[in-house]
Image 1 (tube, rainbow, N blue to C red):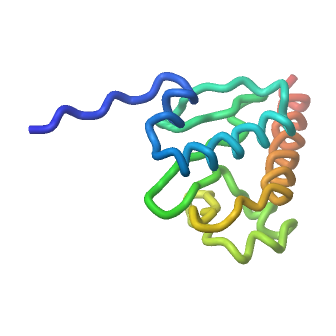
Image 2: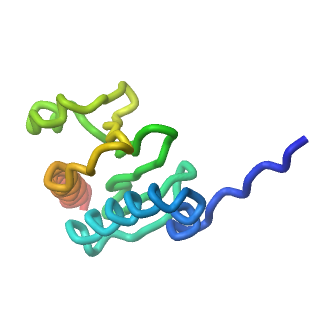
Length: 126
């Protein structure tokens, strides 16, 4: 019986567990999120890279044919018509195909919206 692969403890470990071409994509996504939300803390939750700012901000995962970015809300789908060209699921994810460039302007808008949502929620619960 195969020994289960240990779960990554850091985002660096997570990214380094993928082939080089996927590592580049994941590093670009990570850097984009950090640029938009520089105060967010990096961690691993649900076995995936997670950015935390007043609660979970966004998390992402690499899959066989796509990169998943979570959470995607109904408000985002309504606000960002360009999301319609990507597969989304009931789990609140958008899937960016590995064989296409990441839509960095869209990703920035998603993260900006999540920062606003989490900041507003934090101010309400103060």
